[in-house]
Amino acid sequence: MAIPPWTVELLRRGLSDVARRASEPETLEKLKTQATEIINELPQTAARGFDAVMRATEAGRKNVQRWSQRQSAVTIPLVNASGVLVSPYGTGVRVSDQAVEAAYACLHGDIRKDHQAMERLQRHLHRQLPSTSDVDIAVTTNFQATLVALVIGMSQKDILVHRSQAIRLRGGTSLVDTMNALVPIVQEVGANDGVEMSDFDEYDSFCLVLADDETHDALPKPLELNDRDCIQVVVLPIASLKQSANDTLPSVEKMLDAGADLVIVEGGGVFGGPECGIMIGKTNLVRSITSTAIWPSFAAGSAVMAMLASTMQNLTSALGASLPIEELIETSDDNLRLRAERMATRLSASDSIKSCQVTNDEARVTTKGRWRFPSRQVRIEHASLDGQEWADQLRDEFPSLLVGVEGSAIKIDLRWIAPANDARIGELLVPQHDVDATENPETTSTP
Image (tube, rainbow, N blue to C red):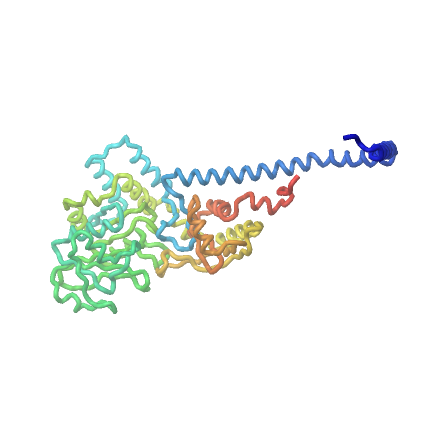
């Protein structure tokens, strides 16, 4: 189809007008100025675009790395910012470097593991005990195993637990149910409202198990049973080896001095060692328990014993070496306050944080226990997540982060956190690329 003559005429006139305008000096100058501005802006625009791409790439790399770690890791690191030291997920407090080295030597594989080698470890443990020849120690794989081993070792006697001290253990079962797991011979006596001497009138020779329920101000004390043939065992789920500056924390040393024949304690927590069960007491009692045919099924391995020996050596060392848990307990209030303020300042810089403030509630050793310490927390509200929802997400992160929940906010308590983990917490709460994007909003602009 031919183009109409009038269309051709219009095109000719338009091109002539464009050519005429292009030849004018003003038009040429405007084109040159605009071209120069575009060329000058290109490096900055490219740089901003490149920075945005790099930051997105780095964030993606970290997400992929965290995912791959979560999928392939045998163990999950734990950072405990809940404000409660002993939780169902663990404490989040490491053992000492010396204890790790002692375990590594045992796990390396090129060591003797016969009876003589275990006896050598046992002697090393014995040297760390209070200076008396009539005290010995035995170690089991866990706290519950120690209680069952006690029942089997004392099965020739009536084993009694007073109802006022039939505590619930952290695993959820009662003390009596745990002790009766294999041989159901433990009996409950008395009433819940307190101990009376008449509660034991029916028994002449027995083993009495006393326990710390964590709520009463007074620690369990061995009873004065006069001429009765009685072995008194004190169970301390939370305790240290030696008495610390905090009088509310019980210790094995204090219980033995008070007249206990045997003390059973958990190896983790404030004790500072690996997870295990420990019994310390009169030599003849310890040996009667460890000489039973079933004891090898309860006994801890060489690595755990080596770690515990190293931990106890630190506690009794004249050089004054302290354990990680001791360092956390002794951290000053000023130190916690400054760290909390720094963390709050960093987190407030992110658009994903709705509000952030520092509080000063007390931290605890257990949820119901009497042991409390001054502390500092960072109370944070997310811009889009509910407090419990955010806490659940953080618990499933890698590393797993435990936090407190208060309504729509979470609380990061610093009492049981080593300073080296502060930055780690910040990265879990607010990824670094979110902070950078808030501080430099132009880096996220589109070129």
